[in-house]
Length: 264
Ligand code: 0O2
Ligand code: 0O2
Image (cartoon, rainbow, N blue to C red; front, side):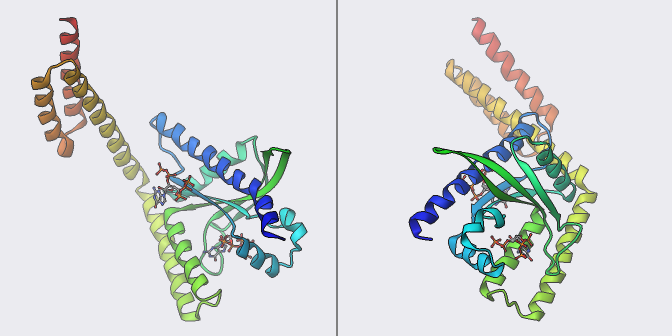
């Protein structure tokens, strides 16, 4: 395939990756807007490099004209989760969607690969609207925890370094590291509620602090500079160690002042 044709061939895949990233990011935003815990931590996506497509086509004997039907991960989207049980929630969210069709799933979380690799894969068929009409492409979701992602990223770069021939003693160490990463995931899961509470508390506090800041700015904008700087000092004292009730009290005081001065 000539360079120009590769560009044309890969365009719908590029569009699909961008669209899927936007769609998944908005799920995360929706949870955050509702002040709820999001099973999605972050998302990355890529279109496979031409050299990797050729290498894989060669390995699996896929003729170039069959690529679009037989190579499932030309468009790849990775969804990172904080906890192992978030993976299943993400899988269910994707299963419910009407804008993509799941072709099949591979559960490498339960069925860990020989290398130590863990992730949940979903292969989908996804319609992309191009200038000349709709085109259906195949795409792969890889859903994994942060620990699984850490391991896979490192193992992937070692595979690159050793051209898929990682020496056996390093392979063994990698396998042990994969098991350790999984134990970490399991231990984190045991204190998930504790961690979620801490994260929630952090979010509540950040929201309160930015609302107080906005109110202090409003005080400044109506010329009450001395009051604003007094509240700023109080806020500074609470930022590090303040409790939610103390921040709430401060917010009420600033808001009461603003109302009072607006009436004058
Ligand atoms: P936010 O608000 O930081 O979440 P592009 O859309 O092409 O410009 P893309 O693909 O979104 O860029 O960026 P990239 O570099 O692939 O990274 C995707 C997102 O994952 C980025 O966020 C990174 O900040 C985020 N990311 C990468 N590594 C980590 C990590 O270890 N932890 C967390 N929480 N996030 C990480 P965005 O999309 O810029 O937006
Ligand atoms: P990339 O884009 O470089 O990541 P395979 O038989 O493993 O060659 P297959 O049958 O297409 O591939 O499917 P599989 O096993 O589900 O793997 C698809 C993708 O999962 C791989 O893409 C990797 O991204 C990831 N993966 C699978 N096994 C491993 C592993 O042992 N280590 C790491 N780091 N990633 C893995 P590619 O083709 O390698 O391409």
